[in-house]
Amino acid sequence: EGLFGVHVRVRRASREDCCTVCSSDKACGDSCINKASSCSKEAGCACDATPTAKVTYPIFSGMAYVSARYEGGITPEVTMSPNALIEVLKVTAGIWSFKSNAGNTFRVYVLTSAGEFADSSYEFDSNGRLNKQLDGWVRAAHVVSDGDAQILDAHARAVLVGWDLEVTAGGHLKYNFQKQGASDVELLHFAFAHHVPLLWGEGQRVAAITSSAPTKGVMTGVLGDAWSLRVDVEEANALGFLPAGEPAGDRQATLQTEALGTLGWFLENENWRSAMFK
Image 1: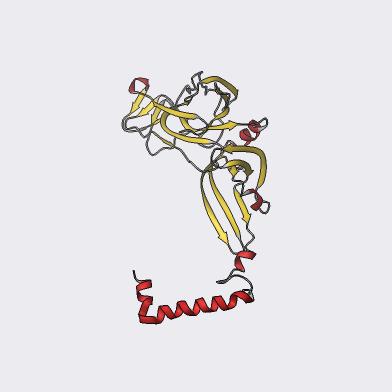
Image 2: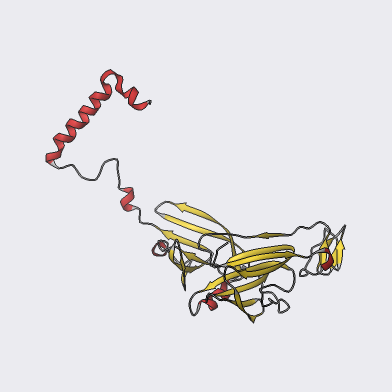
């Protein structure tokens, strides 16, 4: 809700839309197969007797794409609210350009479950409704500047689904990203402003794409399935219980008097008990 102003509706086929209902088997394309068998066909008009439809949305701060994984015979519909969708242009198989009446342009992608661009049989109508069920991904990305579309297209087949944070001594930390889709495509993700100067090593590289978030400011695209960052902790490691150096001579007597006075009060009549156990 509210991400780039793009909204996704889902429609499941009714019984009237099914060419066959698989009561004891499972649906595969336009026919039924044994439940123990693997289905290699795209979603068709066959329906399971017991629906198993679901949509999964992996949500992360800094994501370059809004992504939804469709399973179980669902037909996606991409809308824009409160704005209106005024243009749907097919760029190539699996890639579309959507425009809203607010002047925003979005790249919309339809991918198979393996992360390949959907074939040319998939079409969005002028209302943003896909022409058939999908077992795969729909992704949308905001095109802000010239050149964004090329970068977004190149990395759309890699979908971020999780990550781990690895911290080692010396101020080194690493984001290890988990992805689905095309294994040979690097992830594109946006870094916060404070991330960029901390990037270290050759495991990632800055991309020529930025995004401006209402609460995060300008964010910079970074390519890579892992990010390495290094923080200078030398000054922090040098901190002790007391500030560095010695107090000035004119303050030493005052500090000594205050310290001894406080210690005396704590020891007198066991005042430490009332101070510590309230």
